[in-house]
Length: 77
Image 1 (tube, rainbow, N blue to C red):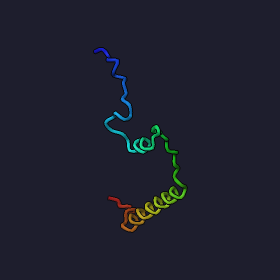
Image 2: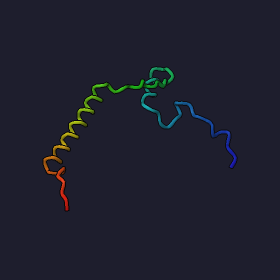
Image 3: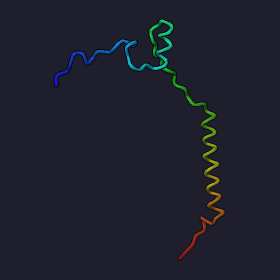
Image 4: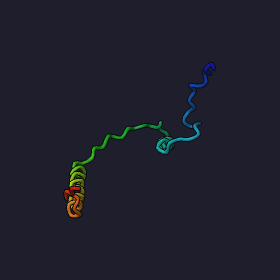
């Protein structure tokens, strides 16, 4: 099937069916829409510390339940 040269046609922003809401604000001001990338946000170290402490507390709770229920007793049959 031959390609139609009109396939690469991009309509002007005003003729598009749908536009992102961030594009609408720029058009109201009479400016061209700008696309700005957001900076990468790193997670603060406090979150990693809380995650590590939570994992250790969960592991300790699991081991204590196993210990109290006799899960470490050796049974020979």
